[in-house]
Structures are given as C-alpha cells and as structure tokens.
Image 1 (cartoon, rainbow, N blue to C red):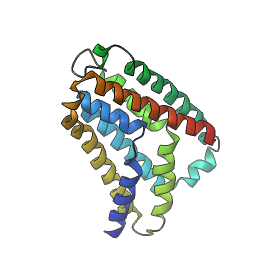
Image 2: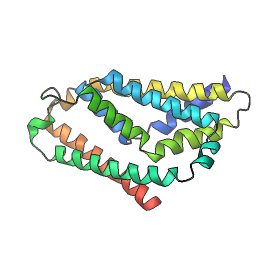
Image 3: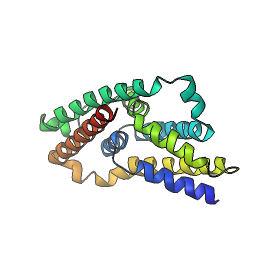
Image 4: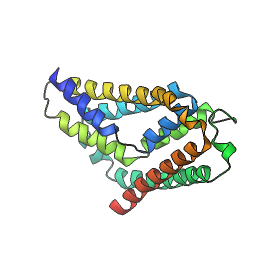
Length: 200
C-alpha cells in the first residue's frame, strides 16, 4: 500500500504542471470535443510509458542510443508549429474562438494531435520512464504496486482535467477568454520547444 501511495503522489506531482499535453486536454474539455477519447489516449499512453519505466528503461536505451536526440528535435519542431497555430488562433477573428460554433476537430485529428503531444515530448519520457522507473527501484518486490499507483494518478488527473473543464465554460463563452487561453498555450508550447533546443 505504501508503494501504491508513493507512486500515486509522485505520478500526480509530475503531471500537475501545465504543459503541452495538459493544455490540449483542457482546450478539448472546454470545447466538449472528443473528451473521453482524448483523456483515454493520454492516460493509456502514460500507463504504457510508466510500465516501460517500472519494467526497466536501461535495456531500451542501450539498444537505441540515438533515440533521445531524435525525440528531442522532433518534439521541438512539432511544438513550434503547434504553438504558431495557437498564436494564429489567438490573434485571428473572434468567430474562430467560439467553442460551440464551427466544425471543430475531427476525432482522428484530435487523437493525432493528442498522441503527438504525448509521444513526441521528451519530457514525458523523462518523467514517466526515467524518473518513475528509477524511483520504483526503491520498492523492490512492490514495484508493480508503485506503478499501479502512478497509473491511477494519471487516469484520475486526465479525467478530472478533461471533464472538469466544463465548469469553466461560462467564462470561455467570451472570445477574449479564448484569446488568452490560446496565447497561454502558444507561449507554453514555444517555451517547452526552446527548452528542448537550448537544453540539448
């Protein structure tokens, strides 16, 4: 039980920060578009990565030593483009910011973007695979429980974020609120991209 609680607490603390993935889930929740599919994609992806970390990441790193730089540059490029699209939405026409109007994203588009924000972000691997994987080694014999706690935290967080966003819809009925949100998303994306580029 102690291992599960520790895994839950650490897993939750790692995903609480506003990042590219969380910003996207929040936006989809506010728009009410494919929320269940998006939160499941995020949570299941986290579960897979946590399982890899708890199961041992060192073997993968030894087999694919060039994986880290490819993920870093690919992730930075994707975040720069996505950030630019957010800035365009923030400074575009007011009609484009109405959450209930327009065609919105297709399910395929939403899932593709969600999975790209998850799997092309090297920080996700650092948090879920490397950090959680290394901490789980402290719970020899109870690593499965530690991983289960971390996975539970991921599911709880993404479901709360995606479906809890509906409580903020009255605020986002005004286009100016969407402009601010899109601006924050754009800044977040570019800041993470800059960190990847400069930190390499």
